[in-house]
Amino acid sequence: MKRKIFYVCLAVVLGCVTMLSTSCSEKATALHNLEELAEDVEKNGQSYGLTEWQDVFRQYQSITAIIDKHYGEYSQKQRNRINHAKSTIKQAAWDKINNSLDLFPGLKQTLIDWYNKFFKGSTGGENPASLEE
Image 1 (cartoon, rainbow, N blue to C red):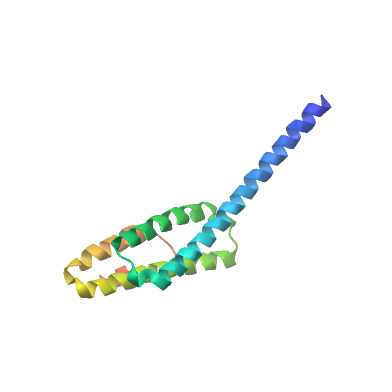
Image 2 (tube, rainbow, N blue to C red):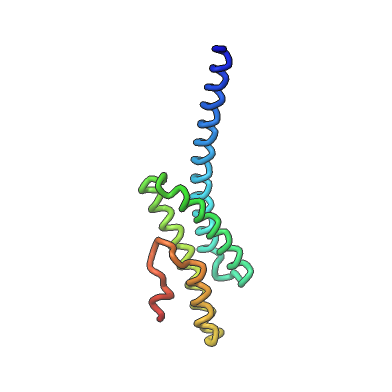
């Protein structure tokens, strides 16, 4: 009987450890992925076409969903890194939109709406599109 109780307790402890390590790993991976995405967008964003930007937005949304789930668990330093990476991505997207506006002035409102759709409600910097309106 004591042996059964021992194994049940061991299973519970191992389950808790696994759950905590998975959660920590998930949040650390999300922060790392967001920073890598920001670095890539900052370096290469001006050469991205529509397909690449759509991929960036999908990645951004999936990464920030994980970050939002764990946001309370991040330290202030990590939160600052998150906000910096988000701002970098937003700024690169906005710069690309502005450069595209020079080539196709008729698309201005469509591009601004597209930008707002993907970044609506995100924290970390002022929305440049709201400054245009």
